[in-house]
Every structure is written in C-alpha cells, then in structure tokens.
Length: 365
Length: 197
Image (cartoon, rainbow over all chains, first blue to last red; front, side):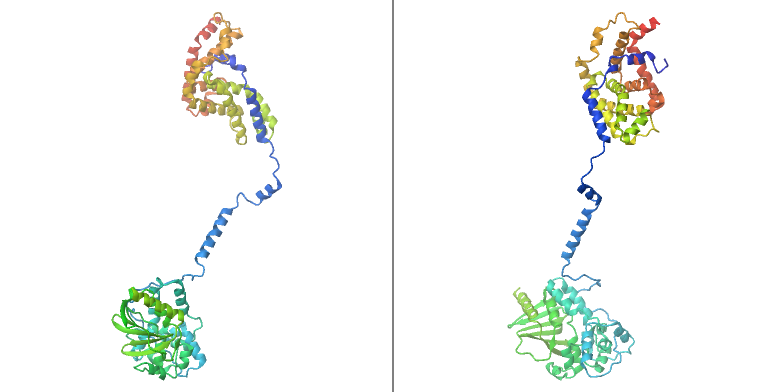
C-alpha cells in the first residue's frame, strides 16, 4: 500500500459484486455489428454512378457556369440593338455661348479647280469627317484674312452641334437618337481636298476670327463639302443667291448650306396665324427634330407653295435661323452677322410629320 | 498481439481484430463505466458503454500507437462520455438513488453475515466491494473518476493529471481526498482487516 494506492480498496474493488457484470447481449451485438459494418468493403457502385462521379459532378462548378450564362444573356438582352457607349467629353450647358475659340483655321493652298464629281464626292464625305492631315494643314497655313464674318460662326457649328445633341439626347426616343447618330456619323475615308472645307475643322474657328481663314479658303476653293447634289450645283450659285435676299457669293452659298444648326435659346412658332414663343428648355423634342431635319438632304428648287409653318429661332434675342415648312419642303433662312441666306431641303416625311406633331403639342400646351 | 496492433489491424479492415480487442476489454470497460456512473445511473451504463465503443470505431483512423496505450485511450473516451452523462443528468441522480430498490447489489447485503466477517471469506470481500461501491457513489464525481482511473485503469498520478487536464498537485490532492473519504467510509471493513493482521 502506497500513499495513494490502497491495496485493500483495490481488492475490495475487484471483489465487488459488479465485477462480473457484462453489457447486455443486444448491446454487444450492436457494437460488434457496427464495428464490422464500419470496415466492410463498400458495395460496388453501379456503372452510371461511377461514370457520374468520374465526370467530376461533385466538384464541378456547374452552378457558377450556369449563373455566368444567365448574366451574359441578360446583358446581351439589355444592350440588344443599342450602341455601345464610348468615351464622352464633358458637356456644357445647352444654349450656352460657344467657348473661346482656338486659333483660326486656315485652309491649305487649294486649287481653284471646278467641282468635278470625284472631288465633290470627297468633299461631301469630308464634310462630316475631318482628318488629321487637314488639321495639320490648317495649323501650318498662313494667317487668315478677315472676310465674310458669318461664315466662321456657322462653321463653328459641329462642336456646338455636338453639345446641342447631347443636351437634347435625354428626352429623345431611341429611334430619334439612332437617326441623329446615323446622320452625324463621320465616314472614315476623308481626303485632303475634302479637309479644306471640313466643318469640323472650321468649327475650331473663333467668332473673332470668323470669316478669315475659312472664308479665304472658301473664296479660293471649289464648292466644297456639300452633298453631291449641292456640290454639283455649286458652280451655279446664282439660283441660290436669288433665293436669299442678301444674295451672298456663290462660295458662301455653298458653305452656308453646310453650316449646322446653331444653338438657339428661343423659338417663335407661327402656324395658322397663331404665334407662340417657346424657350428651348420647354421645347421638348423640337431641338432634336430641327437638328435632324437640318441635316437631311438639301435641294435648290424653290418652295412649292406658301409656308404653313414657320419657326424662328433666336439666340439670346438675336435672330438666328428661320424654318418654313411648305408641303414636303422646308426652307432654312439663316442670319449671321447681318448676312442672310437660305436653302431648301426636303426632309423625310416621317421627320416632317414628327416636327408637325411636336409643334402641335407645343401649341396645345 | 498487443492492443495497439489489434487496433491498427482493425483500422485497416480486419474486423476480427476488433472482436478480439472487444473481448479483452469488454468487462473492464463496462465495469469502469458503470462504477463511474454510480448506482443511481447504472441503467445508463449500457448506453454509455456502447457509445464508448462506437466512438472507438469512429476514431479508428486517428489512433496512433505512438501516443497513449490503447487501454488508456479507450478508458479516457469512456471517462469523458460518462462524465458528460453525469453532468447532463446530475439533478436526476439523487431522486433515482432514493427509489432504486432493484440494485443488483441488494441481494448481497441481504445474504451476507456482516457480524463475523472473515478476511478469507470471499463473501467478506464481496461485501467490502459492495460497501466500496456505495462509498464511491457518495464521492464527488471528479474524485470518483480519479480513484477509478488510478485503481482500476492503473493510471499513475502524472498520467491522471494529463488525462484529466489537471496540474499534478491538483490531481494528487484530488486522489488523496478520494482515498481519505473512502477509507473513512470503509472504516468498518478496514478495522476488521487490521485486527486480523
């Protein structure tokens, strides 16, 4: 017997009545059965289960793959038939005065050749797409000569028109937006002769420099940057001049037609003897519709009849453009720095109908 | 074959090794569980005993012969399960103890002649064992466990301290207190033995 181990208690413990006790037979059988079952070889799995497991069903991320497909399909549906948005510059307030101008562009030396068909075609394409060569040529051109003040202001249009389009994009419907995008999408193959008359290039001209370089270039250039039909008629600018009271020079008439719609702040709508003045902020889709019509095909024929609708646009109180609708034709009359000229266009019937509907809506308010 | 080798063989799929292992330790392990639970909870001895073996079966892959001996490992599992059962059923012990008239030890008390016990008599030791079981029931659970592990499983004090997660001195004092109480409880039997010697 040690201090902590008592042999007498040990013997008593061994002799206790429960020394021979054993668990019940069911408990013993249950323990042995479960112990044997734990190490028993598993029955062979059926062939289809083995194949299923070998295919990696347990660990393959099928759920993730399915979710990826669902999300991809959802995004595709969301962007179906829509343009992918590209980088955008910061926009300015619609109707705000044009920003301070860059150095006045100057046209490179241009042959005063008559407007041959290929040249006209190139010019027409280049009307909407300035190239790097053109910009470079303008930068290296000699100092501009002041002439024809209204021209540069008109030519400042593309940048301004971009702002205008952005300002008007929000309330537009999708089809209008697509139509605008299509009509303003620049072609990729601009050429040097076309660059001379590129409105985008001219857009960099400042109001201060209006009618300088661009005007001089235009004075020496062939009928540039117009639609083929307009360019073809450019040598005979007299009919155009006849339709405009101030009768600008032929090159001016051709250039004026390419000048985009300026930003305007007020519109006076006259229809059926009723006259309503509307601010641009309340004009709804009118600005977008006018821009769409303004970019449509243009012609030289006179109006077929009296105007049924007249929209006078002004910029901060200064008269800018006048649109007259007569049947399927429209006539734009522009006024810049005391000079006036006009041209006739024949927009698509749907555009014209949309314009009349919008006017009706504005008048009915 | 040592217990550890049998366990390794069973872990590798030899069911016969488990049968032998079970046969070796069935009685001792069951007795340990039953004594640890005490008479009031004797009815739960089968369940705890079965849980002990099933735990051994489930942990067969984690058993390493480099650690404790298989017997120590198995007794530790039984001890933990029994103590858990005692903790969860502690309040039921007293009530069951008072009404427990079907204890298998009762027959012994009724048949033994306690007036003239003999140290050579097997009946004396059986009676002493019966008394000891009753004395164990009166011990606190921790001291009871320490005594049983030390006397029945043969654990040393160091081993006891490690298995119970105690300091050496704590385990030692716990064992000393258990012995002191048991000797007091078994005084009548111990005096007979002392007078005979």
